[in-house]
Length: 144
Length: 179
Image 1 (spheres, chains in turn red, orange):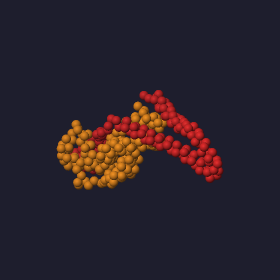
Image 2 (tube, rainbow over the protein chains, first blue to last red; image 1 turned 180 degrees about the horizontal axis):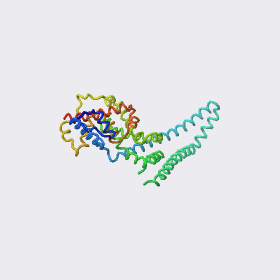
Image 3 (cartoon, each protein chain N blue to C red; image 1 turned 60 degrees about the vertical axis):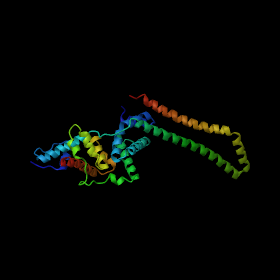
């Protein structure tokens, strides 16, 4: 009759190999308890997940994307306005008359310039939407 | 059912339906890892959401250098560690238990350790282990990760992981036999 160490029992159970047969009763009890533990641990522990968890994650991603997009477009608009202001100040330094002409031109055609800027942003936005939609459609045709 | 390659390429191309599938497929893994490290259920859910958002943002960098499950588990583990660090509970997750004082099971639990309620009671005992031991036990036994994969997930050396697993199982055994 022989004793057996915890390490040896665990290594044997991990490897799925045989254990010594001629064990003392206390050693046999230990082996049996380890078997119960190994069996029990293979089964899934309880975990509480709300059924709408995936939906909530996707909502959060969409919200973050929207905020990022608004930030991006606002930045484009601000850069455009800053650029135009920069041109004015540069002209002011070089030639006051040209600067005044530039301001007059901008004010006269302000709605056209705003229209052009909005068009560029809308085209940019629609292009993103269409290319995302295209990639979803390509994917959905293979959905099982 | 899509395989991982197909799933990843669709998510990377912006397909949120594919991402929804990915979340459903891997949410149990993520909740198991995060839930073993963090006690508060609301924090667990918040961190799990954060994990999937990181997965969504980082999937284009994944590159299949490991299994998708390994990569996801590592993000879940690191996010949990970061959360614990922010909450200043990080050292507790790695605290070595004082075996003299540790009680994993009460007498009733052990009495009831029959085949019928084996799962519930073993896992109740596991839940009293230190957080890192719980995670390793769960990753190895239920999710079937190898030692090498667990090294990739946790960054802990293989020898240390083996040692922690052995200690955790020995603790369970000693408590059951002592009763």
